[in-house]
Length: 206
Image (cartoon, rainbow, N blue to C red; front, side, top):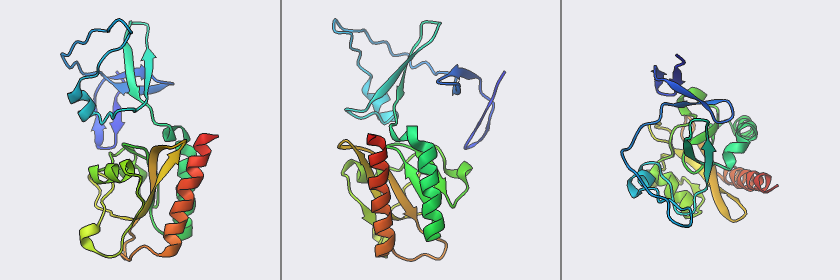
């Protein structure tokens, strides 16, 4: 039986094959049943939407299998560019000497300058989600009260970041993290991040 080596450590759970050759953990039954209405619509319960961070207007991909199962999966437009985003993060890291991070609306999808296994697929914090929701850029001025911790379970704070917008929608965020020596965000770092966010947004629109 196949097993999963997830970011938290070795996880000996059964896997389901699918999703373009990827793997799933065994699905967990919720005990919730919903009926389809006459227009073919089904309501995803509020508690599941809250737990899975599914917001109004979020796109969902639909998968089916030969066993008659229908699976909804959150769709990450920027996730389709994870390889390209990773290359851009590497360039930012080599240019600034600071760790660089790219997130979609929920998780880290690319990182440079820090161990990937410790950060990839980790969830964005509520503070970062709120920043993206309001389409705000961020730069740390040195005030500890305004520090932004962008990734759950990771102590590194954000130095500067900007939301990635494509066709008017927020798709994620790109940021530089504080280095080992500290320091505040300078004009150069802020401009680099702003340009990176605009560039990735344009790539998604093409």
